[in-house]
Image 1 (cartoon, rainbow, N blue to C red):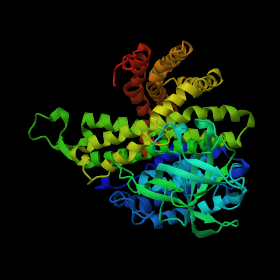
Image 2 (tube, rainbow, N blue to C red; image 1 turned 135 degrees about the horizontal axis):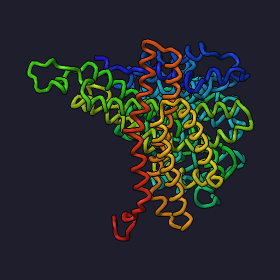
Image 3 (cartoon, rainbow, N blue to C red; image 1 turned 90 degrees about the vertical axis):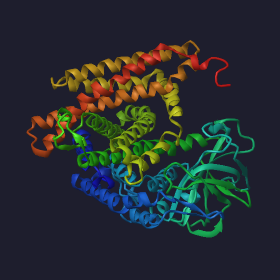
Image 4 (cartoon, rainbow, N blue to C red; image 1 turned 180 degrees about the vertical axis):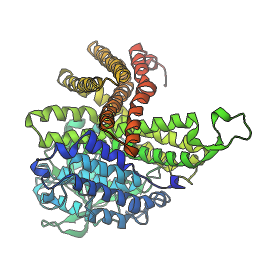
Length: 607
């Protein structure tokens, strides 16, 4: 049955990129993309889809059990097929697709690269953690923070598949409170070289048998550093020591795996405990200045957070398409208007109203998440290559949307994966179909790269206050412009009215929470941070549903026929369904937040 296979909605991916965002037209004439056209982008998307379905998807189930394994001697073995698949991805150019040709990349726009990343992640989420972190490490090592000792060759080594990368923040005694990190970095006679001691936990890709070397990006504290995050510095710690000309030696650095986690999901990804300097000398080269660790790390973390949002989208899309295929094939019961007729023919479950409600909910959630995430990537492209006067404006929108992409899309992704299991019924809870693994693999996304609660506090406590609310006002300006464009179609009055109402609830709630902060009731405000992020995310996805419907109306007016016409009608239906069946959650959240209940903060509870 096709519901066991990984499938990709290339039609929708191309719609978002080329009809909604108009990436090919928008970047036409930009020197950086002079060699690219729509045909090039389509070719790369097809190549990514082929790699996802033919190379990675077959590894998803086989990599789940037993997953990555540890020999007790510091060495991790990845599941069968991972090594060959990794090098196939490298050789196809997919690992380096978004990187500059100067470091061995293809130089594709961020938006196209994100689309390819979505496909690869949906095919085998655990596998793509290795490639995703390597890309993020390579992007950090391209900056001026990277020591000259590594700069000439490090990125090329990663892009060539010779090295991998990790991000080492978490410690057992710190967790989300990164400022409590105790890992030490002692200075040496070389001002760039330090000796590190300590332990890091939950390190994705902390070891592998895929690449010759690994560069760990490690947060640690120098002896006289300030307390908290201000005292953290960042270090590049290779698994094997590297010569000045970039050759990996046989000298093992004392950054050694002492165990791996046995997890709910993403079992093919090695989640390691890493001991530094426990049995020898762990050498680390400083990235940036002392005390600049968190600022430098955010170059990698923000990319990783968008990657987590992509994971939410990718697993959700895979689950929805599996559920859709299953619902089209699974015969059960008779149609609801003939249930009392014992001779009524049985129908496939996609004919049942409740199943159609679930399918529609998943469809609109997946497609609006895709629109949101691609739009963030598109704004990065425009900021880097467009009018310099718009850069601050565009980067402000990227900054505001990053916690929503990470947190809301991971939460909605979990919801979609769970709904897909429900469509399958009892079979969805078994390993016979992939949706139960998608659900398990997806759950971590709300936790790592900063828990969703941390994202919510960042949104409310920092992003909403930045520049006296300037980022939020920028988004409101964008929102109002899109609503005016939708209103001009004269076909979406109900949807526009609903979104205007939700926008006003969002604005009033932001003012209410701002008022709590001004009164000094910080606890009361932060108590509502997560509901506020969910409120904001719900409105944002609604805006994207309306945007897509507006583009679809234009295509219908232009004479779309056949499958294209049906596709565009689906976008119009998405907008109606979202504003009537999903967007009201925003009203409820606004009322909950503004009710101001603080009973869970009362003394004596949970003691």
